[in-house]
Length: 272
Ligand SMILES: C[S@@+](CC[C@H](N)C(=O)[O-])C[C@H]1O[C@@H](n2cnc3c(N)ncnc32)[C@H](O)[C@@H]1O
Image 1: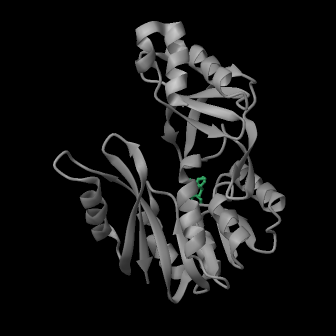
Image 2: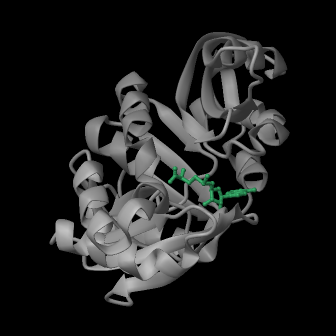
């Protein structure tokens, strides 16, 4: 698809085409494109080329700033097609409604969500500290007989989580909370078998609260961003980062994806 996109762009932009396009995410019927600096005036051309190539794309937005703020929202600008930011995304047999301009969401975590859902056992009580629109919680609740306490501080994401719990008929398994994960951990004190911490920039700050929610033993899945230098391989960097886990035993470390130049997203599966 990327090759075809570049061919279409070549007709419009000539030799510049190969540099004008970075990558894109497909979320429901909306695409989010990343275009390198210097090509901002070509956003509409790239957006229209994408819609021409994939008829199921009805609107194209460009990411014009980094993911930022407490709610981890990406700065988007509409560039082509329908000027609508609400869509329905499908993953692992689940449906998620969301507004791409006001909540965090990445389709690039689909594989990781499935990995976690496969690790969880029937009967577990899980705490998803940073639940967003409910993706990790709902994918696992669809597959396993679990209870997933799911906290989120962004009121809009929390509303979509409630909507998605209904859409996927997991009301008896996923319990949404609007509020800070540490505050929620107080009421869960000792009841939890497994904690998810999908907030890579800050997860370690919340580690004590994760521990508090777990009883005598359990699992914590800690997501982290790990930079690595030229002299180091990605695997070495991922393993090195396990030294910063403050308690428990790191049983497994997975490189989830590259999130920037020489910057990894890593998850440590920690046994408490
Ligand atoms: C990187 S996103 C992950 C969302 C979701 N787990 C997913 O993968 O789609 C992190 C989420 O944590 C929420 N968040 C940030 N700080 C929080 C806190 N102190 N307590 C609860 N949620 C928080 C943000 O609003 C954001 O939706």
